[in-house]
Length: 438
Ligand code: ATP
Ligand code: MG
Image (cartoon, rainbow, N blue to C red; front, side):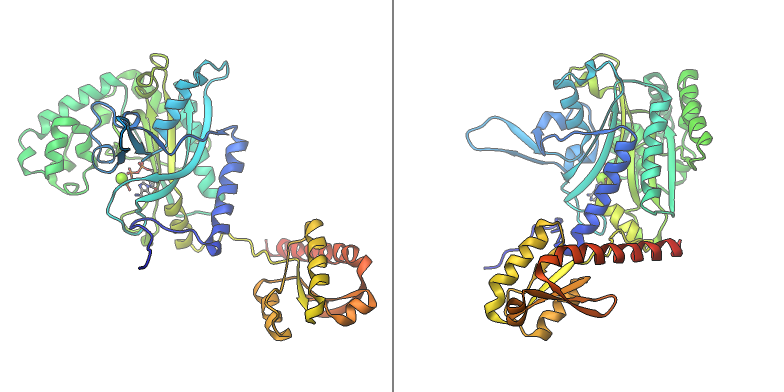
């Protein structure tokens, strides 16, 4: 009998978890600077939080992990995305009553979608997202886009493109929907089966089709921009001007409609242009939504804007650009046990080092000097602290300073002080190096 991880999921092993932690750190820090605060919602919700009337998206209709326990009438769904749960919580906890709007939140964690697994597409993956809830103002739109761009730049991504579009308000969208229906009527039978469904349910989504994308009728389809009300037009121009002022590069992409049905006004994606990304090149996506807060029982007319990035996909994009998030952090000290009888003493020294906050470890496998010294190397220890019968007798520790290639006998009572001095020196040396490189 063997056990295997479910298809489309992955373990994050100790070898790569430091990469994740570095990523999470940057995300948290920048959100803090932008005054976004973390919210944590359950990873499953009542199914109707995600499955809302009229939603025609694949995610909601084909990809959700929905379950019902025995002896229960309650249908639950593992979250496929973050926004719905966050908005549900925003309303349920009356965060909309805050005198300081928008309420700016961020979240991160696993999402589940039953998709066909491939590179950059998992069944259980992690998203990091932000939501700015409670006001409709073009500067709130610009703010989240600036934050998104700043995060990706801060991580070192270079080869990215911001794509921007507007879906306008209800009036703009229904005029556009009508135009699309009229335009596509003669072509509908030639489109893929998904598109024939989209034609009936939500013709805007026709533009999102990856199958029919290159057909002539797609290229000549009416453009959203020709159906915007003057107010919607002005709203979009203000968002663009705010980004222009900050010199955030973007392209207006008039076929960008986004996968979910609740979007209005501004929608955007950030795409990695690196060839290795293949068809899974969208790293981050988001937009404004008007109907969602009222849907959950919040104030009528209150709207929000947010985005989510796929953390696995972002890590792939970083790797494709040769960016390494990991700091090469070795141990401060590795305690080597030279004689079996010295083990308790060595363990005591180790515990003291740790009490002082030194990252340290010791040999517990009773290996030869050579074997232990290989660990010193593998763990990139800055010092090796040798403890044997001789050291116990003398009340000393033998310290190998690995960078300087020196060996010093230090009275055990002075060990911490000695390390303090030495490791600070080493740190300065390290920073100096860095400074020179830049
Ligand atoms: P796609 O067109 O690639 O299916 P989507 O429109 O379904 O994307 P969103 O719901 O907008 O994606 O999710 C935001 C981000 O989350 C995506 O841009 C992507 O980086 C990431 N993401 C979405 N689905 C997956 C998945 N199955 N595996 C890994 N990351 C994903
Ligand atoms: Mg998808």
